[in-house]
Amino acid sequence: MIAVPVPVQRLFDWKVRGVRCVEIIGLVCVAALIFSVYIAKAAAARESAEISRIESEIRENRQRVRLLRAEATRLEQPARLEALSRGIGLGPVDVHRQAVEARLPAIAPPPVVAAAPAPVAVAPAAPTAELPAGETLH
Image (cartoon, rainbow, N blue to C red; front, side):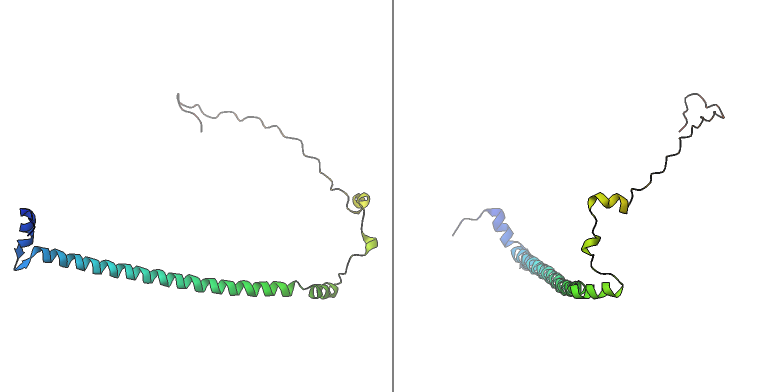
C-alpha cells in the first residue's frame, strides 16, 4: 500500500453525520459542474437567438435593398425620363444653342458686388463706479 501523509488520511477518514468529507466535497464539485454547464448552455441559447434575429434582419435589409435598386432602375429609365421631360416642355439642347466660352459673360454677367459700408467708430464707455482695490471687471 502507498504511504499517505497523515493530514490527507485524516481528511479521507473525517466523517460528518456518517458521510465522509471527501464525498461531500465531490458532491459539491459535481453540483458546481452541473450548474456551470447549465449557465453555459443558457448563454449559448441566448447567443443563438441573437444570431438568428440578426440573420433575419440581414435578410430583410437585403430584400429592401433589392426593392430599392429595382425602383431606382425603373425611375432612371431613359424612355420614362424623356416622356416626363417632354410632358413639361423640356427637350434636348439644340447644337446651335450651345455657348462658347467667350460668350459666357454676355449670357450671365458677373454679379454686382455692393460696396461695403464704412466702419463706424465707437467711443469707449466711461466707467460708472469705482472698483474696490484688488477686484477686476469680468
